Amino acid sequence: MKKFGLQLLIILVLGAIAQHFLPFWSITVVAALVGFFFKYENSAASFAAGTAAVTLLWSSYAGFLNTANAGQLAGQIGQVFKIGQGYLIPITGLIGGLLGGLGAQTGTLARKLFEKEADVVA
Image (tube, rainbow, N blue to C red; front, side, top):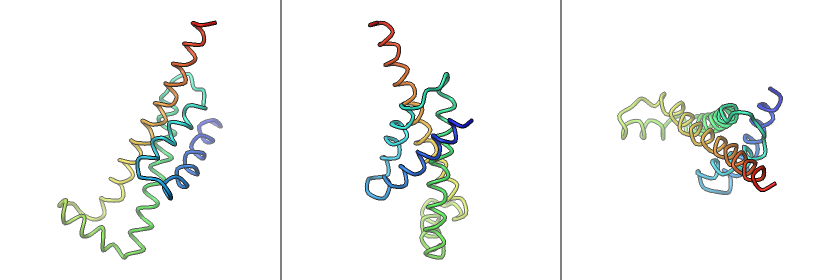
């Protein structure tokens, strides 16, 4: 559990910094790099940590932006997609969570791939 919380925190902090300077998809790369350095027996725990971290990050930032402009932008986007503006923040978090989870799982599986190759070579 300690490893899960640490991975979540590192993805959250590095992801927030990366999102400030890089495009939206950089969160996937950050989650993959962090997932690469955490050794799990199965990749589901890494997926869960990446999902939780990025969902928290994107939902909180979307909520902050929504309150900063009094919900005007969310209302206009909601009209375009024909959904209520209250659904946009959870949808944003869900999409970000999937990106982060898949990135972290990819990093963990890549680590296992290199560990298997090292076992074969040695």
